[in-house]
Structure formats: structure tokens, C-alpha cells
Image 1: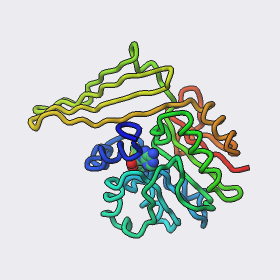
Image 2 (image 1 turned 90 degrees about the horizontal axis):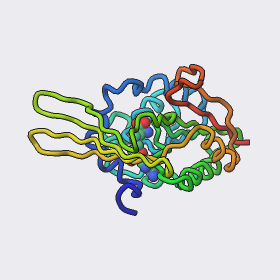
Image 3 (image 1 turned 30 degrees about the vertical axis):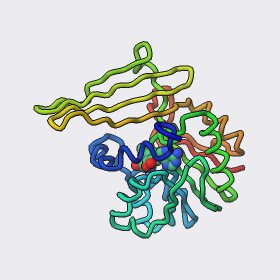
Length: 247
Ligand SMILES: C[S@@+](CC[C@H](N)C(=O)[O-])C[C@H]1O[C@@H](n2cnc3c(N)ncnc32)[C@H](O)[C@@H]1O
């Protein structure tokens, strides 16, 4: 697989700036997610799919939770390894859709919209199936996904000025395909060094479609919230935290 379809594509293009880029992003403070996940983990084995630079896994491990990880990008995992506690965390390099580790896990989680990084319905469904296989009895799968907002796009495209300074401009450029439920984005920075591109591709899904994929894998929706603080999920929610339980 090449380009957007390569599991390592996103991480290899973002690793150098991932933590810095998201440092000021509202909602990315991991504290509430860590508390939520620790409550479900108890003293069981835990797996983060797409563990990245350890934004959530490292503070979770710091609470004594037995966290392991999977990620496709060696470059992202190198950044995790360079952080305190990152050297000893078990991480397998591989494709999260395949869940290339042996369970049973009490908790598997896949957060920050990363399920949508699997670019077809078949790949997302494969992920649910393989998570279900890796969960122990009564194990849970937690996902965090945005609720699609198609009003962002005007005739299949969107251009947004993200940041303008004295010597640079950062623009977000997206194309939307409503049939494939696909959005391809480039975050383009123009500055004295020239042009830099940060690509992101995703295939979004509504909660109902995710619940069907989960059901086909033998997982049932047990809880759904609008955020990590367990605020109610409703028609105004921009995202959902969904907890699926193995039957
Ligand atoms: C948005 S980051 C999220 C990282 C981390 N979970 C967090 O919340 O900060 C997406 C991560 O998914 C990884 N990734 C993308 N596609 C993947 C795939 N098919 N298999 C495994 N990892 C993948 C990337 O390498 C990157 O580390």
C-alpha cells in the first residue's frame, strides 16, 4: 500500500511535529480520558490501538495500569520511546485493523478519531472483529470519534485560514466525497523555508454505522457520552465516547 492507504503514512508525516502541533488544541489534555480509561481497566491488561507518541498511554501507565500498544509508524513510536516511561512500554509495530497482539485484554481503546484513519468500511469492520477476538469475557472496547458535520463543506471542499503571523500562513485545504464518506486534507504552511504539507485522510462514520459494525463483531453498545467527563450524548454533541462490551 502506498500513500494514504499505507498504515504508516499519517504517523510518518506527523511524528516530528505531532506533540507540538496539538499542544494547544482544546480537548486534548489527556487527564479526563486517563481517568475514564483507568476506571474501566482495573487491574486487567489494556491495549491502545494507534498509541502514537503516548499522549494518553504514558499517563495511564503512570497510574499503574498495564498498558500495551500497537502503531504502524516507527517514527511516532520513537517519540514515545524518548519520553519518561516510554522505553519499557510494550509496543508492536503493525496495522491496528489486524490487532496484531494476543489477548485477552480487559480494555482496548482507539481514540482521537483514529478509527476513521482506516479508509474503508471493510477496514473499520475488520478492526471491530479483531478487537472482539482480543477481548476477554466482559472486556470493553472504547472509541472516541467526532460526529460528522457536513455543513463544514461547500460543494465538496473547504479552505480555512488556520494561522497567519508576520512571516507565515497556515491554510487547511480539504476535499469531501459524501459517497465514500472520505475527507482528504492538507495543512499547508507557507513561510520563509518554503511550503510544508501535513496530509490527513479519513473515512468518517455516524454512530449508528459504528454500532452496526460493532454488533456484527459481537460487541454491543454499553455506554455513550458526549465527552470524557461523561456529559450526555445528544444531537448537539460534536463527538462521542462509546463503550462496547463483548457479549
Ligand atoms: C491522531 S494520532 C493518535 C495518537 C494517539 N492515540 C493520541 O491520541 O494522541 C494517529 C496514530 O494512528 C497511527 N495509525 C494510523 N493508521 C494506523 C494503522 N492502520 N495501524 C496502526 N496505527 C495507525 C499513526 O501512526 C498515529 O500514531
